[in-house]
Image (cartoon, rainbow, N blue to C red):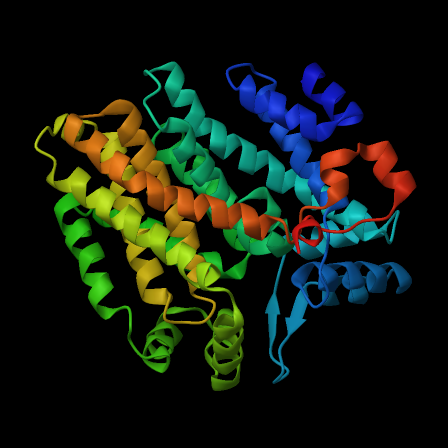
Length: 407
């Protein structure tokens, strides 16, 4: 930790590079953690995004009277119809930070503490498998893809993506480390973002019924045939499953006006923005299909990895089905985190010649996803994150995103 803290104070971005180069050293993952905190502090926050709303909320709470009623009200989100839903994590953090500052950069540095911890730990859960096995060819391409599925630059959507990393960490602990304490993280994810009621439900279905690899694979493949179901149809199903507390959010995500707005935004996006996630989704499907049909099936005796794969297939299935909803694509992104992890773990442990070919042919598609992800990251990664340290960033103050350098 001493080396990581030194780099953090002097030059965090250089420390990040050194962490990647020295990934086997114990301080490396802590350097990634601290860099995410620094990114939160220097992050460019575009107008009309979640981050600007959270900063405004910080200012409003700081300027309001410190009463119990105002504190409780900060946990409620009111939609256009006046219906309320409850958030826990973000209001708690915002109320805490408001005790000593109205500075949005400091708020997101605190968000970065939690996000960066689980982000760095999830990467090293995969990286540490190299210590037990030989590092295969293209391993680093896959690791960077994994780190980019929900990259540190997604801190702008702090609730959803913090919950995603917390959920993944918990599942990995329970299924691959046989650590039941991971259940705390799994169930805590719903306190960070309400929508994790669905992934938790999927986990419970898996945990109770223990579906077979074959059945979960067939369900997954079938989901590609029905993922174009009408939004209202899917919304109707969810209305019968989800608790009443979550229904206002579901309605706001599936109403006609919201759907039309999202469609307009999608149509205005560059072609690579529209397709990079879909490319990853189909690449994951193809590679997992190779795993399923591979002739050398030594992995079938690895119950922990099989169970992790089954749950990943169920999440990928939900991701395919929910992608019909405008905001449902977020479930697909969560599932991709699991899907890429499955691909890497098989690549490390059971690297047959057929699987090597599958990875080789998939690399161009993974690289396409990686390049577009890095391009997207330029929207929120600031020049200060790459060229300064905490002291300089506090003094200079001027900030602009990397995308401004290439436009």
